[in-house]
Image (cartoon, rainbow, N blue to C red; front, side):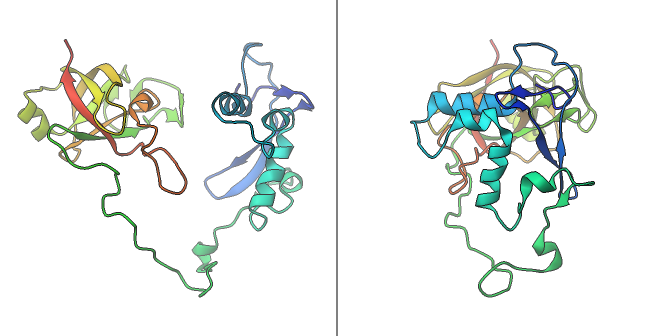
Length: 250
């Protein structure tokens, strides 16, 4: 369901909040007729996935959040009261409200009142070791893509036209593996429990990318990311360093 379309839920038409490039947050309410009666909103999709995969939790009423998006914003306000005070009321003020970036004004929310730098607990930030034939795949957006919404098949930034089924590869790696520009290859998971996952028939594009690394588009490549391969605290999937190997398409 697009943002311009009416999002009708259990408590009536819903509003969503938007944050722009300048940290301004404002409300939006769609008015166009949905393209199909079967379309689901993003909150409904996420809640449905959560209900299907997670154990019941009395603190998380997924259905209530889908019925009324204001309750989601209330929960955000409770979690981050300094950033989202009066969230539901403020987002429809003219121009919205500024979330603020204290660090931009050299305001450090620490006990010392100064910027504090933490040393990472692990030197290998990718979570897996080097191995013969193993590449690090970084998933990318194309020029005409916003998050997972794809608007076209031309990536002007990288000179790709008419397709998204490609993989960017370093010239030295291509020579070493006997691969030429335009060859079709398969990407196969190579660590972290994803060795049975593969993405077939991607066209190789020679590109200025570091040796041992590959680049390809998401969400097409998401299936190659091991579930356990994520940031230590936030659990965000490590989509910029996915362990894979290359096989020539048969």
